[in-house]
Length: 123
Image (cartoon, rainbow, N blue to C red; front, side, top):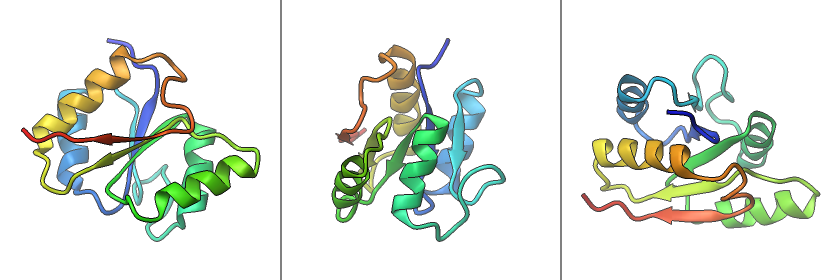
């Protein structure tokens, strides 16, 4: 399967989500804040959006409160973001991993550009 984009997982999402995705969908470009090639732990949200744009990764986060403002500011500065997917805290790891792989494999390249999409995965 080929993927239209990769993902950057927010530092507040569990490492077991990263490990599950990596274990089941190894071809999917996947990074997590705090890993070797992604932004460092504690990186501010505006800098994370710049990294996502440069690396063509959709940000996956549970930050619903401040991320809309950061995205508006990012776009107002003339930048773009491949997209932001927000998750609910109670979503099952396996269901989230499968949904993310399906979305990346079935989406157009710029389908989520400059948007925040709530992934309400309740399984």
